[in-house]
Structure formats: structure tokens, C-alpha cells
Length: 231
Image (cartoon, rainbow, N blue to C red; front, side, top):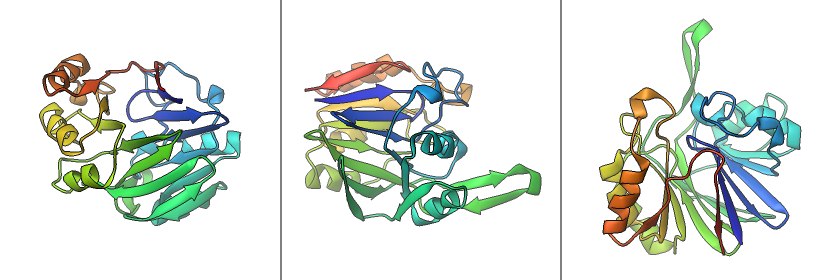
């Protein structure tokens, strides 16, 4: 049994048995979040890239749980300087952990921390996605990305049970491209992410799920705080 808790935006928690992990925690900065950061218990935190709407709560969540952050080398190094445990990796690499296996995939986006006071942008390595093997399931979290042809390879290399795909448009794929991505990766089930958090990325998640159904792909536009269970 794999339990999926959607915390809004791109923040996803995966739990099976004694293990629980979080991807891209963005709780305190999300007005739509339904869960308090202090109530989230995890052992590992996976970060797709260095933008604030994906890493804002990573350090605090890691400290309150003594959890380990997994990210690209540059981002892991940067966050490690803030007093948390980190593991750096890079695109194409894989890592075995107590809960299963993580492989870092490519994504087409940008990645950096903006320091407004100094008018500087700190480079945080390449953006990424993750293929996660956990609880007998294979989960793909695309991170922030546009559509790219090598998503077809992901569908050939992995039997993806569940995919989290961004649909917000403007900064990532929109619904039309996300639908193509869902077909290319040959997944059984899609949960849309990275939409409705802010006005510029407002989308109709239910309409996207309906479009998936027309392609015989199951989907669920989870609300923040909602839980999905895969037997």
C-alpha cells in the first residue's frame, strides 16, 4: 500500500509502512495548504530544483524531523551549509535508500535562489524530476518542466504506476502538453500539480482529468490535504 498526500502546489508526501518522504515542500508560503508544517513527519526530502516555491520549507522540515535532503549537488551543498543533512546527486544517477530507490531524471526548466537584497541569483544546478520505487510502486514526479521528447524513454525504461505532472502553464507545461507527456510515459494514473497556487498558473484540474479519461488514462485532481491510496 502506497499512501499519497497532496499538500498543494508540487508538494507530495509518499508513505508506506514506517517510511514517509516529501517532495518539494512548500507549505508555509502556500495560502491553499491544508496542513501545518509542524504536523508533517518524514525521513527524507526530495527537491527537484532551487526555486523558492519548491524549497521554502525544506530546511525547517529537515530540522524538525532530523530528515535528509536529496537534491542536485549544488542545491544539496547550499542547504547543507544551513545545518541539515544532505545527499547530493545528479541527472541520471540513482540512489538506494531505506524506503526504496530514487533515480534523478532530467527536466527542462531553470534553477536558482534569488537574493533580493543583493540583487543576485545563485545558481542551483540543473532542474530535475524523480522516478521513485517505493511500496511496490513506481512513481514519477516530473518537477517543473516543459514537454520534452525523452519522456518517451521514461515510459520505455520504467513501468510508471503514478505520475505527478505540472499543468500550470507559463512556467511549466500546460494541460495540453501534460496530456501528451502522460501518453508518452505510459503511466496508469496522473495527478496534476503546480497549478492554482497563484493567479498566473490557474487551471482546471478536473478538466485535465477528463481529458486524460478520453485517452483511457486515470487521473485525480487532488485537493491540498487530500490522500490517495494505491494498493
